[in-house]
Image 1 (tube, rainbow, N blue to C red):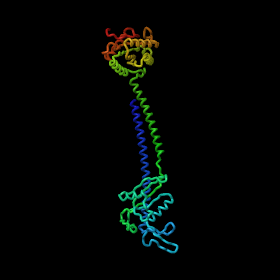
Image 2 (cartoon, rainbow, N blue to C red):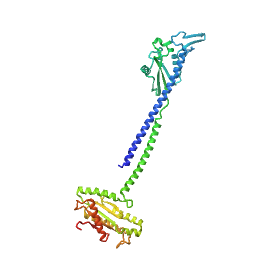
Image 3 (cartoon, helix red, strand yellow):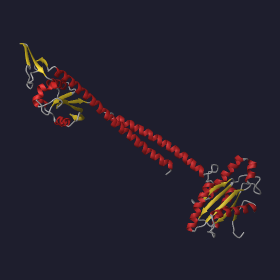
Image 4 (cartoon, rainbow, N blue to C red):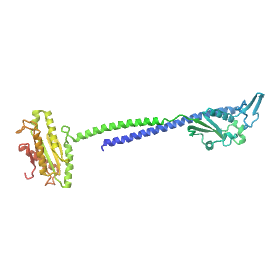
Length: 406
């Protein structure tokens, strides 16, 4: 796996991670905002009730006409609770607790915000706490200032909020006999808020999925382009741009690799160096464009003349080429060299300054580690080069072998 692909995979997982974190962060943030809005709304109702109760208490209660919905409060034990104005009008005193309960009943009828005044020591049985209210009241006695949470009721979501009521001086008229003192927590008011604000979970999820897919597409596309560019650069580093076969650098790396393998397994390694005959004269006569075309055809012919997957050819420089033949004896290498020579001649590329055939031909020098396993790879190259020089001296278009005794 290439480095670009590794980086691309890391970026993909990184992007997925960032998108997931973004989704969960936004989701949690929306949940917090939802709770904050519910909490502030419920607290506002509570504060409003406290103000109304304070107004009522500061007047020692208020008198209202007695009717079917507002009967005298049997739990209010104060002088002049009821006042008869005439035969048609009877007034009764409404204290803060009675007023709060009546407001609660009105709100309940409208199926809106509901609230309930309650105490651990209620005078009116209707003010007894629910299990949740009782738990909150005990928490208030421990110093908790307020509490709120979402609850499910009848398949609907509500926000339940509760805060304590502290005993004021005006409250002692009714509650002193219960042992309360100014500042004591004598109960609380719970607010049940129907909450219809919903977190757009699926739009949020789909939005992040879309963002994630778009980002992944961009990363993958960029990764593919970078990988292609990297492969192109990598190829340019080892492939000759003109002939499209390996270059000299690639040959040097492959020679070292094959030479070490040859030494390790005691197998022969043969090398052929070949050169296009009279190539300078060809360029001078036909031009460099035709010269480049000649190099392409010759290199392709050399490559196609090799039969085994392990055989290797490269452009050595200018009009010179090298052929590396692992596990090949000297005689085997000579046969390959002769095949290459004949195939190039068969191309029939005209070259009027290359006598006597007036065709493009090549000369080849062959050397092998066979029988000389202690030589270095540098020496192997020198020997093949010596054999090539001999082929040139002897008239070109031929194969010569390096011989130690010559």
